[in-house]
Length: 305
Image 1 (cartoon, rainbow, N blue to C red):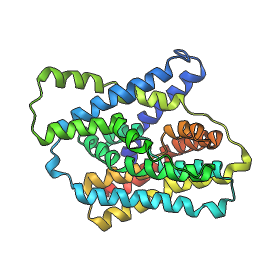
Image 2: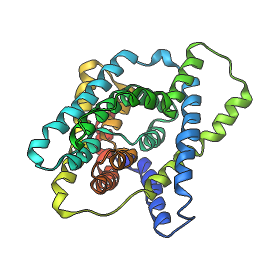
Image 3: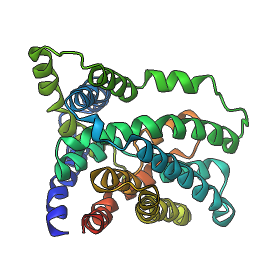
Image 4: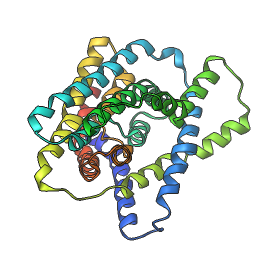
């Protein structure tokens, strides 16, 4: 476990550095939003395309992984819904618990996967997202619309959001090139390599810059529920599902990593756009990101045994 904690430590230190930079005004408040867009629309797709193009996809247990991933997504949603009667909170606040229990910080998973398992983990991380994101996005659009009050999910936006997602586009390009054995010029692969080198450092700094250390004590139970579900219960379920579907080795490690990772910063944006509880969402994101530094090492050490 010490070796795993040592490999993960620099990742969380970069997050801390990003937090310090933002609070001290360096390099300026206007830096962070464009930097995050650069990562999301350019650097991360470059990383995904290069990694998938260079991977041996024939060794990937595509079917069993997909079953385990979709089952995990279903469990995430069902368990979160079961907490609603217990928490006794309003709809907007519950949507923050729901997002905090189901969404996944892809940047952090890519960084930890690369640090622990090397470049070969990136293609598996991308595959997880390609399977999970459409399912989770569709479910959250419906549930958030219902709990926030409109009761009318805007289904027409879901396919558009999926097709326009840079991660999905990067996966599609990489898989097409790999599957059809399309020859890639060396200069293009070099360009993708140069671009993807900046992905994870900038992404981790942006995660830190987005942290908001604050909490309304009256909603501490809601925050604690989202933290417990995502960081402690979901990894255990992920391990059980992998064993059930016969997924082992690196694919299992990636699924468990995603199961125990904190929620995505995009959750805060969605909470504001759809009338959710944005302050609670910010508190959940911050608490999960900080505590994940303590919960992920023993979980990943366990499956490495």
